[in-house]
Amino acid sequence: MPESPRIPAPAVSTDPTRADSARGAETSFDPLPSAAGVTLEHGFASRLPELSVPWNAFRPESPRIVVWNEALAEELGIDAHRFTGNSLVRFLLGNALPEGSEPVAQAYAGHQFGGYSPRLGDGRALLLGEIRDPAGRLRDLHLKGSGRTPFARADGFAALGPMLREYLMGEAMAALGVPTTRALGVVATGRSVPRDGELLEGAVLTRVASSHLRVGSFQFARAQGDAALLARLADYAIERHAPALSGEPDRYAGLLDAVVAAQARLVAHWVLVGFVHGVMNTDNMTISGETIDYGPCAFIDAFDPAAAFSSIDHQRRYAYGNQPSIALWNLTRFAETLLPLLAPDAEAAKAVAVASLDRFGAAYNDAWMEGMRAKLGLAGSAGRTAVDDGALAELTADMLTDLQRHRIDYTSFFRALARAGSGDTTALDDVLPHAEGAGGWVDRWLQAAPDPAAMDRVNPIYIPRNHLVEEALEAASEGGMEPFSHLLSVLERPYTAREGFERFERPAPEGGPAHVTFCGT
Ligand code: AMP
Ligand code: MG
Image 1 (cartoon, protein in one colour):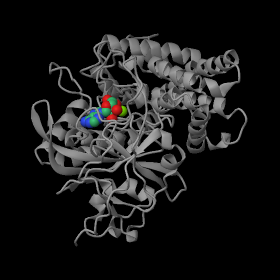
Image 2 (cartoon, protein in one colour):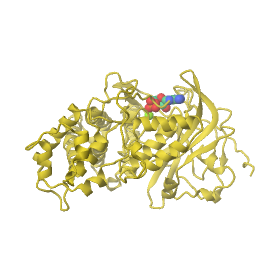
Image 3 (cartoon, rainbow, N blue to C red):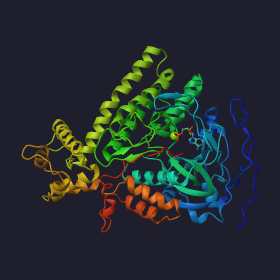
C-alpha cells in the first residue's frame, strides 16, 4: 500500500539560544491513519513548553521492524493488526504521528560522574506524547536514535546492538519484577552509523515509560531561575507519580518523600537481583522510580560490591555496592532543586529536605531486608518468622562475606541454597565447598526452617548474563535474530527451570576476559 501524502513539518522553534534551529530535510511526517486506533496526549509539551523543543524524527528510506513487543502493545491497547501498509513501522519511527502527538526533544541538565552539565537534553531522542492505556494509566511514548536535535552531542543516531540490548534488559528486568522503562519495538533504519571505526546498522528504539521526568529535568528547571516553572514541573510530576498529593499544601515535600521512597525501593531491587546500572548520572535517574537508560549496565556473576563494568567508570563510582549511596547523592541534588518550593525561608526548606533525605537509609534497608528475607525463604506466610531482623542481618552479613571471599556466583547460589533447604546439599556443596559447619550461617539458616518452594519463586535461574547477551547481539548484528529471540524467551520466565537450558543458568566460564560494557551510543 502506498504511503499517505506527507505533511510538511510545523514551524521550528526559533529560540536563538538553540543551535540547529532548522529541522533536517528528512523530517516530515504523515498522520497515522485513525484506523490504527492510537491517540496521544501532549501534556508535557503543552504544559511545560520551556522544557522542550518541538522536533521531528528523521525518516529513513527503507526501515524494517526487528522486534515488536506484542505483550506491551496489548498492555497499551495497541493492536498491530489495525495498522495498514507500513504505518506500524512509520509509527514506531515517529514518521506517522497519532492524533494528538506533538513530538518534542526534552531539555534536562545533569551531573555526569559528579560533574554538572547545565544543558544535556534529548540529543537523539524525542517524546512523541503520552498514551493512556486501557487501565487509565498515562505512559510516555519516546524514541531513541531518531536523529539529531538541538541538544545533540553526536550524530543523533543509535546502533542496532545497543538498542536491542536496551530492549532485552528492560524485558528481563520487568520479568524480574523490577520497575523499568520498556521497549515497544526496535526498528532497523537501513542506514549505517559509524562507531569506533566501524559501520554499524542504525536503529530506533521506541520506549514506554511511566514518564521521562528525571532528576536532571528538575535541575534544568531550577537553573532557569523561574519559581513558577519549577512549581509547574513539580505539579506535573505529582500528577503523574503521586496524584494523591495533588492540591495538598505540603505536596512538594510529599513529592520529595515519594521520590526518595521509590528510588530506595528501586535500588534495593537492583542490588537484590545483582544489577549494576553503570551510569547513575542524575539525568539517568527517574522521578517515577523506574530503571532507565540501559547503556553500560550488567549483572554480576560473582558477588562483589566493587564490581563495575563500564569502560568509562575508572573510579568505580557506579560500582554494584556503591549504588545506594549514589542514589542518595542524586536525591540530594533533587532535593536542592526543590528548595524554593519546600518552605518560604531557606533554613526551613533545608530542614524539610534533610528530614526527607534522612529517610532514605531506613527505606533502603527495609526494602533490601524484606527482599533478602524472601530470597532466603524466611518471609513466612504471616509476616515475620522466628528470625528477627537483627539475626537476619547477622546471617546475611556472614553469608555475603562467604560469597565474596570465595567469588561465588550470586544468582545460582540462591537456587542451590533452596535445594539444601530441602535436604539435598549437593548443589550447595558444589558452589560453596567452604561453608562452615555447626553454628555457621548455613546451620543457623536451616534452623529457621526456610521454605525452599518460596525461595524458588523469587530467586531467578535465568538472568541476562553478560556473555549470553553479547552472544545474542553479535548474532543479531550479522542478521541472525534467533539467538536474541531465544534468549528473550528464556528471560521472560526467569524462575521456571527448563530442560535443555542449562547453558543459560551458568556464569561465563572462569578465566575469560573481564566483561566490559560501553555507553550505548
Ligand atoms: P547518555 O550518556 O546516553 O545519558 O547521554 C548524554 C547526553 O549525550 C544526552 O544529552 C544525549 O542525548 C547525548 N547523546 C548521546 N548519544 C548521542 C548521539 N549519538 N547523538 C546525539 N546526542 C547524543
Ligand atoms: Mg541518558
